[in-house]
Image (cartoon, rainbow, N blue to C red; front, side, top):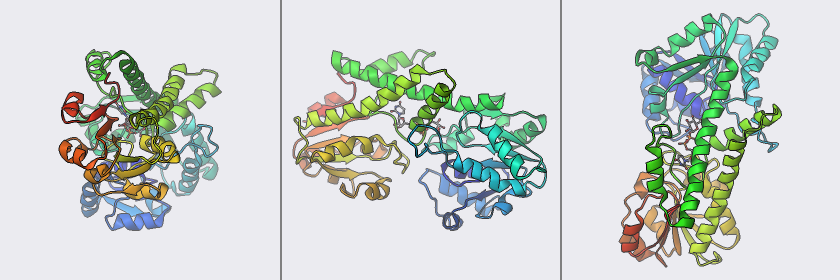
Length: 431
Ligand code: UGA
């Protein structure tokens, strides 16, 4: 397993749990040292225990030496990062992928399946094959595309009980190896989609783009609800109960964030435009998402009486979703800065994200719990639906706040109960 980031580490630990022998490799030797000491570089529920168990049982180990990880391996997974390019043009940056391909090539000493696990633009698998062939013309290998569908915070369960496994493959020989790797999932009758390389690569982008559209759609419906005095929760429930639509991913909120949807939608748009086939529905979803975040700035400003200067905003949640410490493209971190620029003070709490946030936003103050975040606050804004924010003592909050204004960007609370508790309550789409 090349790369011990989110995908590599979860995949490595889960494949070891399947009974395989997995050697996770990362160039960053200090990270490997920490992993060897049982320290996880990310917060993901259950990951530390799974890693510890498989290390103890001798199936999982860590190295910064490429040769140790690759030579003798039946399959090598490439699970390095594919951030948006620094040019800011939306393309995925494939530097790390190609570097990994070049670096592993010399150690392919027998037939090996090289598996692209990272989310990569269509055509990358063939480029990876070219890079390996150039670096080691004698290597015997096949490149396979095997996109991941893990959600942060639920990654282990998503790996162990996936809706489907997608494998883009061109030879029977590689197919046999992949079947062996995923045998435990075959045994529990997981659907497998075995297809061509390009299709597998595109499936990943299409899935994330569709989910992004679903979220942007419900966010726009929420805005319509606000204008017309309708309720988006009941609307989403009723619409989602249609089996053709489905209830999942119809939660209105401050816009989607994270390391995947924002990056993958842009990358898909670039690939599509480059090939003369614009995907307008996804373009709209991306635009709507940016507008939703801007709308949340206004929502907070309006709740503060039209001006944020000199006001204190209590913040519940900084991460882009619960059960992760990931702040990448988190809505909170897009919505708060314009308010700070105009003179608001931020008093924030997050169960996992504060240490990282403090590096990016040293001007915020960080507090120990939700109640401290409400202390003297003019408004309290719930950005992330962590479980510990779901049953707060409302009277305690109210007694600490300067004015009892609660903005619930995840629609966790019941508007009627909040009103009864004496709050001025603002949700998303709760007309
Ligand atoms: C997403 C996909 O769900 C995974 O299937 C995929 O494997 C992963 O990207 C990836 O490409 O690696 P993730 O980014 O971890 O997973 O998180 P999600 O649970 O999908 O949430 C993404 C964002 O959408 C969050 O900000 C969340 O709050 C928001 N969201 C989600 C909504 O606003 N409403 C919803 O109904 C659902």
